[in-house]
Length: 195
Length: 88
Image (cartoon, rainbow over all chains, first blue to last red; front, side, top):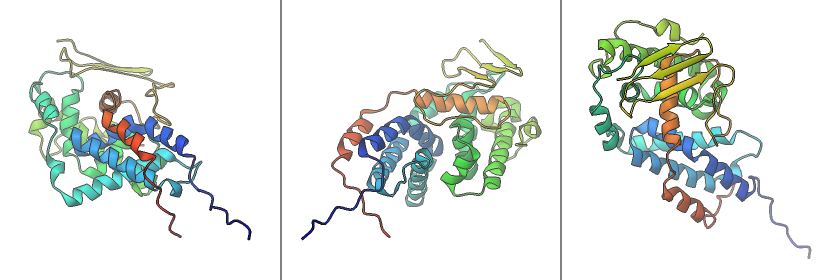
């Protein structure tokens, strides 16, 4: 009786897969932290995404976009967690403390603390697009693959997110803290709109 | 307090204040700096603006952090975790 051969694994070699994951850890952590504003939770999400990706590695097709695939898993993990808990509104205590000690008026350019505060107030669908494309350097196409959105949706969310950030930063002499929902003046929003 | 914002055609520089939290972002047109070790990172079609520069700076700060040991332990444990069968 002829031996029955094992079905060939469909994913990449495990060493390659692991190396690819290792290389992505910094950007996965950054994306997760931007999404949930909580260092510990972000790392938990990243690790959970890695474990899920590993378990599903045979469903990954070598030669396709590994980064987009990993980010998609992480994003799904984030939304799953959002549905389960309200922890997303909690801030990393270290971040919160750091933000509080920076006077809002103490800047001429862009204050990173203001950006963090403003990002935390953006609708998550705009925030994630800015994190993927503006911060993370993904192409619009990759961001569309990660989020499952149409290209036009990606672009419009980025444009709206950037405009909202600009309004928050420009408003009240640059203090994001004082610009809760009112978008304020247009400022440089028009110049920032995606062409 | 040291502050300067310079937006030119080829470069954008942000130096916001003496606080360590607020740091410098330099973007070069044409060849924009890519984060070390991050595959495929590039910055398409976005016009230069300080908000984008600040977002990248935030991203780069986190990406530059030392990876917690938990991640390495996880990678070590992965070998013992089986892959799920494809469902088709």
